[in-house]
Image (cartoon, rainbow, N blue to C red; front, top):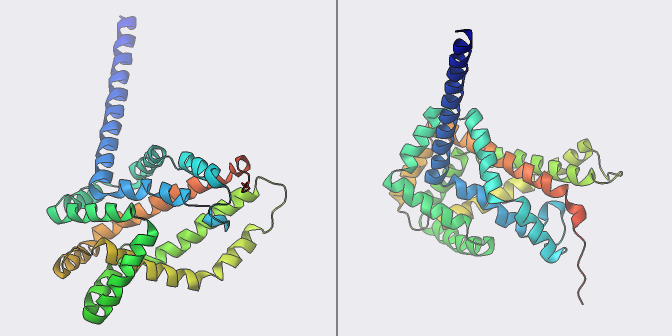
Length: 275
């Protein structure tokens, strides 16, 4: 009888464990669906393109390491690795209410059209996107300045410069400190590095403001003024702002972790010489 009770107790514990695991799997599936519906999956995976373009964080010429850099960045910024890490963090901090709110808007007809446009924009080379955006903004400021203000307000609603600048500094610090840790000699301490980067904040803010507007002008070029205004209203909703607070934090942390991992493997690279 004791043996039977032990067996039944073990089975009960197993059922509880399996139920918990099934719930976690279902939650993870729901979050993955959220990433796809909102387009945040493309925002995450497109970071690979930026990393492969060249070691800009270190200030080196993009082609200094040639194909070696491209291959290493492609490996370190593996899309599935980044998505899994994003899911880990979202599962820990994102409540169901925010998931439901984000899904409701981005799952709508307008929301899906916006996601399609944003995904296309993420995958468009920067040079092309900003060139077209510059022409659009120039015409907009002459003929429709209100639209430009709405586009700026959209950026501000999801964090804007105030969240981007500290994140960029933190990512640079973590990358450069990880790169310096490979050797016994560091050019700057972390405090000195932060002080140097702090001096660049005004220029960072200006660049982010300019390129955010150019990028938005490009991404939403096929949407009417009313649709842009509707999107702005959706982004300014308190729950949507909480959604983006989580998503921004997740995206920046994934990026920082990947650049730290990349920095730790810089010894695998050697400058290529032209023959």
